[in-house]
Image 1 (tube, rainbow, N blue to C red):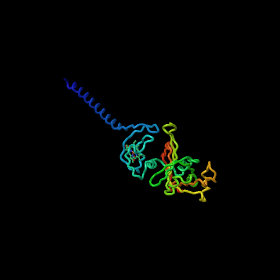
Image 2: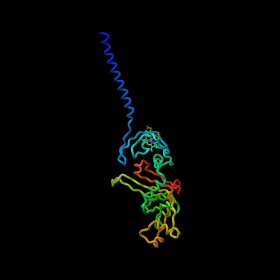
Image 3: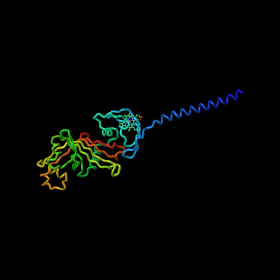
Image 4: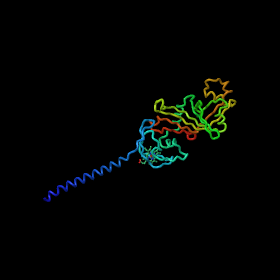
Length: 259
Ligand code: HEC
């Protein structure tokens, strides 16, 4: 064999080695990009969620502007082990992590959502037991309070006389059963309630605001007590807010709003 003929196989071998190495490097690179999330399927909005596990977080942690993107409808707890400590709720976590509207803008949305006499579920507490009932409430947009008319002697009145704390929710939205529009809206109110009896000088003027429909004022003074609810905090929830790139949960605070 000549020197030359031995060189040819060597260069071929080198070329093959080079090709193999390039292939390996490519494969390596590819492998890195391929750290794939786990698709855990669609949520209410029909959008599939892909989990990329992050580090454990405390509830008050706020994600940075460079945080990875993820699918609409996912919560922090799906990718992070979040330590909730009773201070920051999952709802507040939304408020902290996504843009907030101005307090006045939030208030306007609350007013628009509660145009008249609206059906609410309210919870009152006595002896550590919560009781939820339904009532019609009317929002007074000027005073920023709500009025309820209640038959005298109801359980909630008894409870409110002992414990003025009240929580109320009004919601609208689709259900799986009716398959309707995939939007939800709600207001969650936390506040205090004052029971106003019919011999209170304010009773009649408040009753007017309530816009009583079925019963005459003469009967109302015999039958009813009024409840004036002063919201301290309202969470306004609106899936449409996602489309204006704001948090779907907005928090209105009486103290912050300066009312
Ligand atoms: C799809 C999964 C996913 C969701 C949902 C998610 N994260 Fe993360 N997060 C990660 C991963 C993964 C990291 C680590 C960095 C990386 O690999 O992108 C991370 C990093 C972080 C960090 C540290 C770096 C940074 O960007 O600030 C914080 C803080 C954080 N996440 C907070 C949150 C909060 C708060 C929420 C909810 C509002 C949330 N994350 C939702 C996956 C997620």
